[in-house]
Structures are given as structure tokens and as C-alpha cells.
Image 1 (cartoon, rainbow, N blue to C red):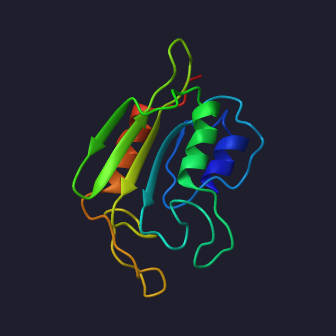
Image 2 (image 1 turned 60 degrees about the vertical axis):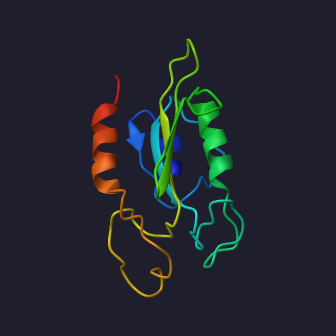
Length: 153
């Protein structure tokens, strides 16, 4: 849903932070780039990282396809400008292409992460069948990302 809001309200939204969700629409194209920080567990069985059928829904776009769509919309370089590997996660940062006025994209790949809030707590047996990325505090990281990427008027 947050990707759709970014498409439809890009003139009013500076940044988004999808967690365990991928792009579900192909239009409208955003009127301006929107900064994105995306968190996704590699062990997510509800919205699989590689796309396809999830445990509770028939089809999901892959994280790679979602980011490729936004890399184009945000005028970013197609390859990460920085990659940071940690024990439990990898961070990939995509920046605007040379000479382009774009917005950054940051991907947190959570090695053992499932369909959970990174740094959160298990919240019920239905969704708590997968791991939580305890070394990543999504709430703090998102707040800092939003502060660093305000809406430019």
C-alpha cells in the first residue's frame, strides 16, 4: 500500500518505508522521485523475497522487480553504490545517476527475517512462524531516514 501512496501522492510524500511488502501497481508513475527504505526478510513466506505465491495470497512481485521499477522512477543507478554486509543482514544503497535529480533507495535484506517488524517482537502464532531480525531496529532506522530525506518544495 505504501508504494501505491508514493505513486499517487509523490507531490506530498517525501519518503516511504515498506516492510515485507512489494509494489502492487504499475501506475500512475510518481510525479517526482520518492526516497525509499525497504526492509524484507529472505525467509518471508507471506510475501516471498523472490516473488510468487505467498502463504496467504496468490502472487507477489519480487523485491528485485519492485526495486528495478523504483530505480527507474527515482533516476537511480541500476547497481548499488554501497553494500554493507553484516552477520544477519545486508544493506544496499542506490543513489541518483550522475547529473540526475533523484531520490535514494535503501534495501535491508534480512537473512533470517520473516514477515515481521525488524527489531520488533513476535506478535502471534499466525505470522510468528519466521524469524525476527533482532540486530536491525527498523523504527530507529526509518526515523533517521525520514529526517535525512524531507520533502523538497
